[in-house]
Image (cartoon, rainbow, N blue to C red; front, side, top):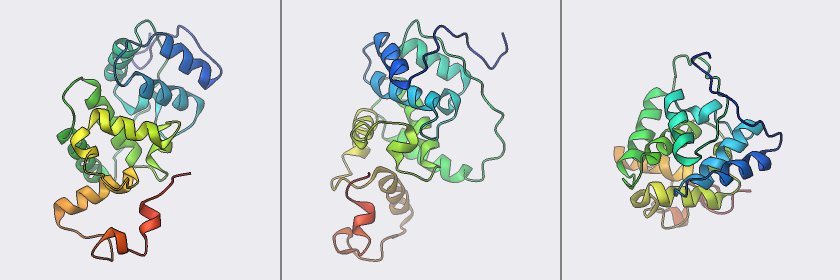
Length: 193
């Protein structure tokens, strides 16, 4: 076996089939359903997450064994080059890890996955391969509750995370003194369809 692969047990052709298969093996942990959506979407080509949700092989293997015992998937990790957004990535990851719930190892994996998705250009829930923004809100509340509690006006999550980073540095990105009176209010708040 090559060092960058895992054995295949099943190879569903539909993401809903893979999702159902994953959930039939779910361990009953808080992130099971969210990870199942991400994995099924990634394998179907939805979202931006690379194979293994962007995690190192050992971490993705541990995620599968802890959340979906008995499920085995083939994952081929591509070599990664220099990341031009490494500093930005480190800041987002640090922010998430600072606010993790400290209930389960999967929060660390979730922080890595969310950070990778933040480097993409669509709505965060779509980049993660989640099926709606509601699942992203649930992800944030389960894994990073103190951070999620700060999003009192339901700001779009990616914008919210970057706003938190800007506030740490004393940078005001909004042209108005308050989001409520900003001309770009609708771009930061409201539905993400």
